[in-house]
Image (tube, rainbow, N blue to C red):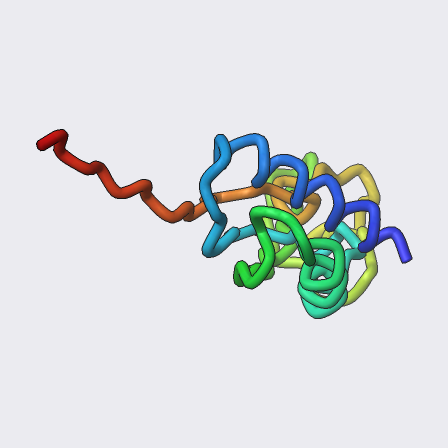
Amino acid sequence: MHELALSRAILEEAIRHAEGRPVRRVELTVGALRQASPESLRFYFEIIARGTLCEGATLEARPCAAHLRCECGAEWELEEPLFRCPLCASTQVRILDGEELRIESIEVEEQQCTKPR
């Protein structure tokens, strides 16, 4: 259910960025460790966007894999929720990627300029 709160924060940022113009698309990066379902984010975004500048906007959430680094220098992509180095079995690892929830772009409708006659 925390996807609802995340979607609300994304909506608020998109509206702030839009400066009164209709929003057409919002692109996100969602890390594998963020525990936020891209499908749920889209679902809630569509609901809470009703009646706002983001109504009808597309929310595209791209997943980002989790990458870790061990103190021994090994780096790997996390495929299972085991935070143990595959090389030396140490649990002294650092997360490099995978915790992101980042708005990459917000596409707004440009206002039409009219020339005075």
